[in-house]
Length: 92
Length: 390
Image 1 (cartoon, one colour):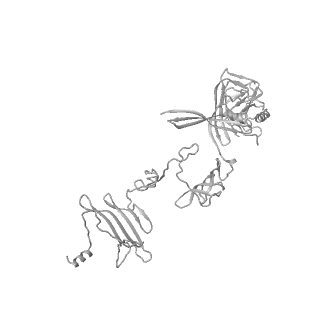
Image 2 (cartoon, rainbow over the protein chains, first blue to last red):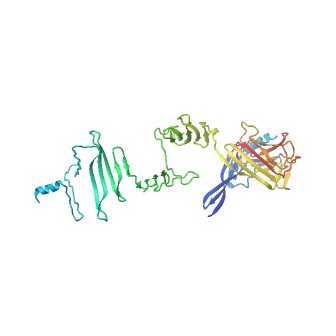
Image 3 (cartoon, rainbow over the protein chains, first blue to last red):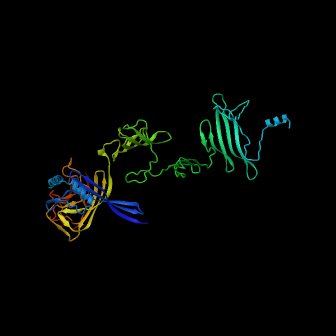
């Protein structure tokens, strides 16, 4: 009997007005090559991140090549600006 | 032997015997036309014909190892009805099975019956590529199609076929095709579930949703109320995915997703910490609605606070866009507060539109900032919440 574990990004979605990138990472347990368990972990990325009152591009250096490519493709300057404007407007 | 004796013997029955492998009787026709010939007639010429008269029996005999003459195969014929104009005939083939002559097949005026004697005798049909195309297992009272050993009343087996994405060895074992009206939207095939009263209690219906090509279909589950014999739609799987209920087929109202999992929340404003004692998040997503729970505490001594609003980041799905809601698509509530914020006015948690963040506010409505009196960043802070996704 051989148990193996592998993780894969099994779903990458671009959603919303400001192209949020949602990444689902699946952890798959297999017994003798047959899947017996699959669980999900998620994280989501917005195009800009505000730190200490200043906006900056979200750091995606730790993301997979595929996720980075998607982020770079959909996060235009216009999207970033619109997102920052909307978020700033929501601040109390 | 006199000629008269020869004729008398002939009229009382003839036995032709040879001691070799030549034919004992040969009927030869030299007729050159296309009509039947040679011809053997077995004639029941009764002066008082009656129903169920036999009209001929052909037997194949042998001697068993006890030197007893034994019938191996019998072909029987009957006339169940001798009435002029409505005559019926029955034809039977019987064979010896386990020492008893048994009916193997019977053709009568209303049906063709195999195994009329109800013994443990299977029925099997081979096709060009399958030795067990159709099997009736008489011993277990089961039918197999494509299997020699059916395990349920009707078992249909098939080899693998082209796979659906994420599915291996998809076997279209049964296909129901409605050929009446072709590619007409609304045209449907169905599996009905009924009682012996022949009223349909429930039905699974596949509806064609594309009048152009025939591609695209929805699957409808219908039941009949106890007050009448009328099927009513209860649930539908739309051609584009998603479940609808009670006849409302609008895609906007379809339940199209369910998922559960984990995420890793973090403070992204007001508080920073290089490591957390607890940094856990779980979620359940049902359609557009996400329910989540979060446990956070920055490891003692690792937290630092500043004058920015406290924000918890990285909830698992982006919140919905700003229409019709302008400011908020949901919120959260504190489930455990181990002196994280110790001011009586409490803390409110808002999930704005288009974001993956939870923003913290004081009871007064002002942003709760990290270095505010009452905030003890490194203490346990557990919350649960709910919001709409994009």
